[in-house]
Length: 216
Length: 225
Image 1 (spheres, each protein chain N blue to C red):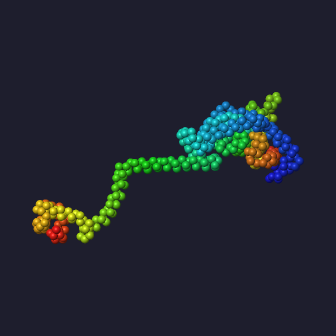
Image 2 (spheres, rainbow over the protein chains, first blue to last red; image 1 turned 180 degrees about the horizontal axis):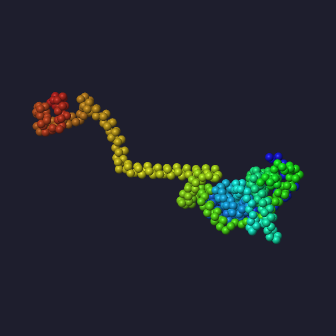
Image 3 (cartoon, rainbow over the protein chains, first blue to last red; image 1 turned 45 degrees about the vertical axis):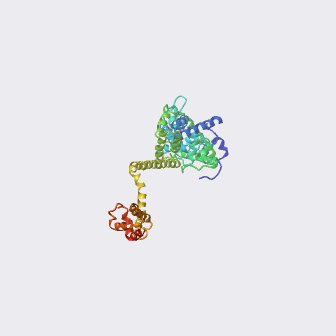
């Protein structure tokens, strides 16, 4: 699949920049103190203090639910997926190496769970114009036709992402749904940064082909 | 998908960029926030899960001398060892902890049981038992060897070392001699009385060995002085 070509430099600025503000864009001191707090909380949990996990849940719950909602498109299902992600992270807490942000590690777990749920369920387009979470904000009020088109388009993209082959699916989901930087994706997946860039570019092209081809 | 025209290399950058923007717009729409009580819900679910690293929690509980936490860690270790979706390394540690605790418990219970049985059953009877058998077995082994020697040898050799006893017999013979005086008077009556009235004499106990001696050599020796 890989032909070894490096990603086109012309799209590096747009694709491989930081279009979405990642959680790791905090000041260095704040980020390092957060990592220390996370590590102390994880150490406490591993030593038998379950309540120390509450700090991690309170800190990461918004990002995890948001990530799951981007993949699934449904708030209630996103909450269930987020809860499952936290429980899975608790079970596997000894596997966190601590060499990166806890949130990035947790986001990867949440992305996997959400993608698995999205792959299992039927194709459903959720349209709720009154739901502010849907982000539909049209001048002059919601137009049912436009609302339907947008919602169908969003659902089509989500489904297309969930049906991509690995490793493209994971890289695209981590980048655009999980708001991870390319460096964080490389660290979490254990792949070189150049390989991650290649996977991202090819994944986008495959995704476009899938969406435009109407094979959903 | 097969109906789509092939994508040229020059179009790849443009297509990727367009798709990237569309995904960004989709992600920006999601402005959800965690509902109230979400953290409590997660913590309630977590409380039903075993500890992620029970072996470590067990060590911490032992150091802190929290027996309840240690027991809970052992219980969690069992759940981790037999449960699914747990990393293999953590499961191996949990299984090792369960094995060590089980072996240690069996050793303690077994040792306590053996000690209790020893205390209950062997305390009143075994104290004379183990002491007496070795001497009792040694004494018979020693006694047969000397016993035949006195029983068999008295006819010939062992009598010679018992000569001191035989020397006491002349004392008995001296008693009459002291009354009548040394010399001739003693041999005459004693020689005859020793033969026949040895049993009837005042010195009845000593004559039993001496009577035999007096028979063999007592007459002539005693008589001749």
